[in-house]
Image (tube, rainbow, N blue to C red; front, side):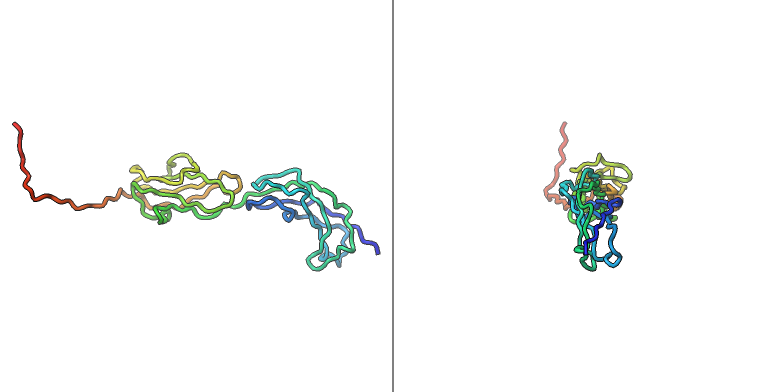
Length: 219
């Protein structure tokens, strides 16, 4: 009994993944089917694709000029590969795509160790810092918002903010923007603080000497 020749159908082949910090791999190839498989063997054989050269790029984007080969492999329910040969195993061209991932997590505003970006109290003179979520490969820039006004351009070094006298009565938020191109949407915002209060002072005791104070006028 002669092994039956099969043809790999690659019209719908795709090499796509969502960004996770790693390059495209052979396991990301999908959509290849086999033409000519006997119905009884449909769950016992499949096409397995292997990239000819593993890409090194891991950022979101489109990568043209990639190639792969195809081999027969056992299916999910058995192995019928001995009954077939593949007529077109040689290199096939494909464009790889790494799609942006969803930017996720919570942005917090902190005063010392306490989170205040959820209606927490802040006062003039307080130093606030931003706590951004961990997203692999993200490159963050930070923009502080007082009321609806920006306090300077977004910057990677803009991780803290000193509450100004002019901020009194307004809420404060921070906007975190990813500039890597690996995520969408590209920005997250914290919840707002409570309206900024006046600067807090701590009263200290005043001691007056019991020595007499003498007023002397100069003629």
